[in-house]
Image (tube, rainbow, N blue to C red; front, side, top):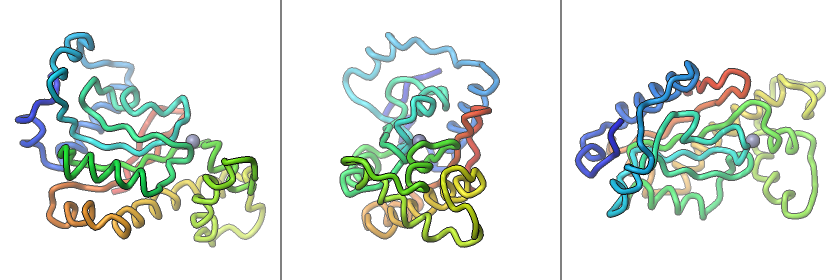
Length: 207
Ligand SMILES: [Zn+2]
């Protein structure tokens, strides 16, 4: 598997970048790994990096973007924070990753059985976590189909909130980052949501 270079990165379309991630996740769930020499990639990326994707995912120990998409060094800007929430520092990271470095796709990746989403559904308050979990509340407000047992024990409710949270996060990226929104409108990048299933290892993209 080749290391991304300026040439390979600039020749990729957003659709091709998405396909690389899909192919990588397919290898992951089939327990296949691309042949990759990480130490050689240290050398090949020492003078510069040309990653093709930016992935916002949870800190959950099961959702490491490089592993679940079978990628190597220099492939992915990995933004990780509990509950894959958004704030202005993360928006700034996305602007750097796309506008400055040229990644072709932004993935907002939620996952099943997310402790942060469950915590938000249970209205947990604890230290600095309270502020973080508050950023998931809009998805809970937006969930209107489930009328009973709207808490973290109801997996149907948690799954709905997880899905809505990803979609609202994408809406916010477009609204709160004119830089990223313009790149998307020009067709230079694609912003897409996805869900990682911790039971199967499979990522389903919201297409
Ligand atoms: Zn999580």
